[in-house]
Amino acid sequence: MTEAPRDFIGYGKDVPKVEWPNGARIAVNMVLNYEAGAEFNIMDGDPQRETSGDFYPHPLDQRSFGLESIFEYGSRAGVWRILRLLEEYGVQGTIFACGRAIERNPQAAREFTNLGHDLVGHGYRWEAHWDMAPEFERDQIRRTVQAVQEASGFRMRGWFCRYLRSFNTRRILMDEGFTFECTEFNDDLPYFVRVDGKPLCIVPYTLDNNDVRFFRGTLSTGEQFFQYLRDSFDILYREGATHPRMMSVGLHDRIIGRPGPAKGLQMFLEYARRFPDVWFARRTDIADFWTDRYGKELA
Ligand SMILES: [Zn+2]
Image (cartoon, rainbow, N blue to C red; front, side):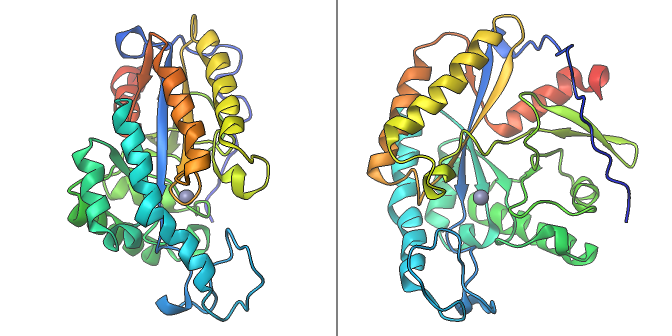
């Protein structure tokens, strides 16, 4: 095992005075997780069915047509509602894409790129990278890149692990031409880490500005989601007057894509759109900007 140092300090007290494009005070990255069909399923040869989002007791070694159906709401209806809202408000964001989910809905895959969103690898399927042998992990990353490129035309350069990364993930990603990684929750700005002495841009993600909290029972209405996002936005925007920040928002088609919660997304887009100096940005653009502008200084 290689070392995996922890950094408790980061930028610390001396947060860099970032200059986002056009003097923006905040970079907002809306992330839609696209993963229906990438979850565990007996049908796909798994020993056990999916349990995330479970709502009925059901044997683990049997398909749950109910839970499958909840995932399918996302790929059939929810994804289109979210894409329409983002388009209506002129927002281009990021798709965290599972390879197998993308293969199963080529129509959605094409629409992601048609609308100008970027894609970031989210595993070939929901699988534990932390537990993979290096060669298998490399194969699965390549397989995801290929599946996404074939279905959407987009060549991914960023990655976010569903079940956390392994000691090898970042090394493999860099070998495979990736330029940024996102499996971190520890800052309001991108930063660089060193992998085998070379800098890799990290664009952190978040589980708090995230609709997954509906499934965890800590949010129940669209209005609550909006309020939470608005408060995050207000604080970051305020700080951004002197020290611009980044805000991630995590979305799932089977969760926020339902009409009730979707109202909260609509309210947030309406709200944030009213402010000047907000950069709604794709994750790839944030990583590219960060590397071009701050690569020499901070890496
Ligand atoms: Zn996800």
